[in-house]
Amino acid sequence: MQTTSTAIAAALIATVAGAAAAEGELNLYSSRHYDTDERLYTDFEDATGITINRIEGKADELIARMQAEGANSPADILLTVDTSRLERAKNAGVLQSIDSDVLEERIPANLQDNDNQWFGFSQRARIIFYDKNEVENPPQTYVDLADPAYKGMVCHRSSTNVYSQTLLSAVIENHGAEAAKAWAQGMVDNFARDPQGGDTDQLRGIVSGECDIAVANTYYFARALRKDVDGLSSEIDMIGWVFPAQDAEGAHMNLSGGGVAANAPNRENAIKFLEYLASDQAQQYFSAGNDEFPAAPGVPLAESVQKLGEFKADDVDLSKVAKNVPEAQKIFDQVGWK
Image (cartoon, rainbow, N blue to C red; front, side, top):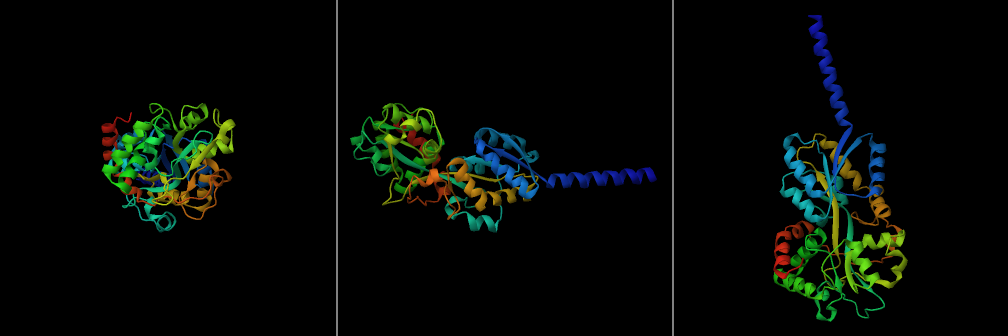
């Protein structure tokens, strides 16, 4: 009898100990590939005593993994880049709605999902860059990029890239599908080369003379202002920039964000982590560590980001923009945007 009681007591102790250990953990699935994010994780661990276990990979692979794991998934948080991927995760059923007064107060409504399944924590403006020696009158809006005056001058990423998809989705939301198709056709007509490479490659295209005009996210350029980026920083003074549509909707913003996993075993820790990412400390580090714009208003910018100047950002509801991605992909195919 004593042996049985002892065994039961030991089992209970083990169960409680296991629960206590779980309360001190957070399982993070992340497609953010920036070494500087390490500081975000260690600061959270130091402040809370919660240990972060990370699994990193491409966004679509992580979403597929969470779907395959189902109710047994260890994931507590999904972090990824771009609104379209956040919406993809929501549609795949791998996120859940949460209630957080902190997040509602800190994150603007247009930078979060309408059902509170994902929240944006950092932003990048997708703007127009140009060769100051070759372009006297750079385009002032996204629509201007399709003007025949810029034929053979424009470089942009491929239609399969999420930044391209979200920009066209925003054009659909702001100007309608018919105008968006005309814009996409004009862009294809004005390409200096077939779409290729990443955003840094578009900027290098200006340096090499392949492109006179390019579209890229601000943090790639700001990074080259802050430190040496091969093939870009040494000639960066030749590149000018325009924050588009300042008399209209404003500059399109790409979002980096995250949400709580649908079957999160450490749900409360997951919410704490998202709330931490919205704090002044973390928001400042998104800017200082990765040259991004904070999502929370009023947070000081890193020097590299300040150099870009003040601008009006498009405050369109990014949750609505994300829903236009299928229509955007259809338009890309129709106009032959590779």
